[in-house]
Length: 525
Ligand SMILES: *Cc1c(COP(=O)(O)O)cnc(C)c1O
Image (cartoon, rainbow, N blue to C red; front, side, top):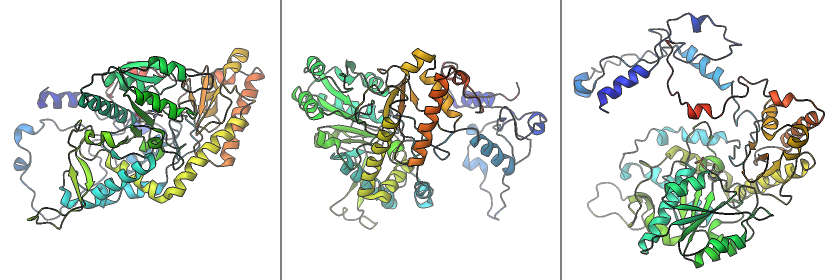
């Protein structure tokens, strides 16, 4: 597509300002829906009026050559600052967020994120730096990145890490490409990657994207990898195994040392899906369990609000034998000086390209401000604090497990880690109230829903991750609310079928938005 048709398509697709009237005359509160910013638009209205500075304007022809300029101005919403703030404030009141209340969405780690991380991420010295600025001018940023890499390696027990991947799934793909590069360097073409049946959905997707075939191993009756089944599928065609430990049932793989030995024996690598490190921070390290590659979701464990498409970061840490394959360039701490003739003071930090790098997986420094937030979170907690995060996360989940044992079915009744998987199987069979109904009904009580129908191997699964940030009083209120919903259902009350009745939207078709994607809005309709 040429840039001209590009611009035209964008211009055609962009909404036009409303003819006026509709949005302006609607009552502010009690609207069924909030108008779009384009419907609030009034020609000529604006939020800021820049004062002239007296500096002569640069001739626009010199700045943007004629052939690169659009003929028709881009249609942007024209609103006053007051209307702008009102619009987004009203929108923010229409949804649930980690700042509003408990968000026990299992596997997603929706914990409260300390505001100090926001404060650091908006520091102009960090936020206003051009990513293309040379290393000599960005020593502060480079030292931040290097320090973060070092602490992430200390936490995971690995040798080095890349900070580039933009999210967990991007980290997984990076890890699989590293796996591929490692085997290729040994002159080997392996085809299969093993995944347990309880795995997060991104794992098999990443394996396929990485050019491997998925081999699934079943879980045993205790919810862990079935060792016998694993040995049966292991051979020299296996590139590696992807595991989450604690696994997605919230259970610790107790035979991890045996698993590691068996996979290494056939020349395979161990990949650790560390999206949720909450359970093990400062307590046990994937590197010590025998893992070769670890990705972390900084947006889950290390404080960046995520969900709804927010930014993330999925650094990948590796053991010594994979360091040379990492994506480049990598920020490094230079121990020696800088070559003579350098006009700047000797740089302590620099960019280097790993010798056998798989190449870039993100532009520039990765999602740098997410990285800054993560380092802030880690430094504020210190190693003792991080260990307490893990202890509290595990304690909270187990408190709920015991408290809710008589309320729901508990498929794996043994101590869990940072999340607990319950089941509404009996409730559905006896009272036709499903896990989904319970989740929707809970929204009316002021709590976000837990994860439902995952892991796939548990019937009517309700996966609750309270996180360490909720108090005992909040856990009690959450458990009371869940119990009341079940008591209500058992009494024959079918309210849950219609829930949620108090939210801006009730049950929506969850698949339709993805299947019939409408990415633009035309206010002329
Ligand atoms: C969230 C999650 C992922 C995927 O992370 P994204 O940042 O959403 O791509 C992978 N594995 C597990 C276990 C997760 O919980």
